[in-house]
Image 1 (spheres, helix red, strand yellow):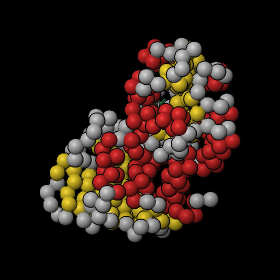
Image 2 (cartoon, protein in one colour):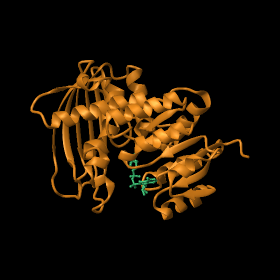
Image 3 (spheres, protein in one colour):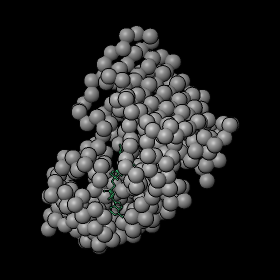
Length: 334
Ligand SMILES: NC(=O)c1ccc[n+]([C@@H]2O[C@H](COP(=O)([O-])OP(=O)(O)OC[C@H]3O[C@@H](n4cnc5c(N)ncnc54)[C@H](O)[C@@H]3O)[C@@H](O)[C@H]2O)c1
């Protein structure tokens, strides 16, 4: 029997293709033992690519295996809680795609199940592991831009899945773009700006795509620190390239990620910040961090508790979308 950490991949659709590359990069310490997808072809494809032993259609059969230490869940949002709780009860450590769940009640049950069964629960907020964001975070923490007073984050993408896909169903996604790509951006704002005190928001469905929820949203944020923030996200950017811009303005400078990480101090010219590696999205680093947490027992940077806080912010934003007033985030920390 191999002494490598045995992994099971559950959900072999879109995002699992980049997790695959992360697992292949970690093959010196982890090995993919089994894959699972209700679509057998998808499970078989990842099984072949990852050199796994078995492909399943039923995750419960995969969880019965003794040679699995951990599972990687790349599933629709409404399945995160069900499968993560079953995995925890089977004694498997869990890496689960973002957001943690579609509501706080499910998220809390996941966290409780992981605690009860003494397994690691990490939510795959890959942006926190991207080399650009790690570099930006180090600069901000080192005081290179002084105290941040304004944080701006944008996401533009064309997301048009065929009718019947789970992303189009707000009950499976947890809403629209704010529940889809929004959690990444809100998580980044929390990571850099600290906790958010209150939010105001507007959202629309332009009718350009099949999406059942909102496809476009604008959010204003006020942080406990006194800083303010702004987030814009759309999945209806048909003629516009994928864009993710993040700008942090401080009293002594500014750092942003447009055209690579760029730093300006005290009104000086922007200079490019060298990055340590080419993992722009952070998936390799994310998987390496998960494995390290399993080995050392350390709490992941993006733990279940941390992801719950981002979910509380998502819920506050949805309330703000329906309100003409600012909404206090504290009301969602229940
Ligand atoms: N980090 C990122 O940048 C990023 C990007 C895209 C998606 N995601 C996240 O990844 C997750 C999955 O999204 P996706 O885009 O890969 O979706 P997807 O639809 O491409 O893949 C989901 C897969 O799950 C399978 N599935 C559904 N029910 C199942 C079940 N009961 N058992 C086993 N397999 C089942 C489907 O057949 C499908 O292959 C979501 O949480 C999403 O938010 C993250």
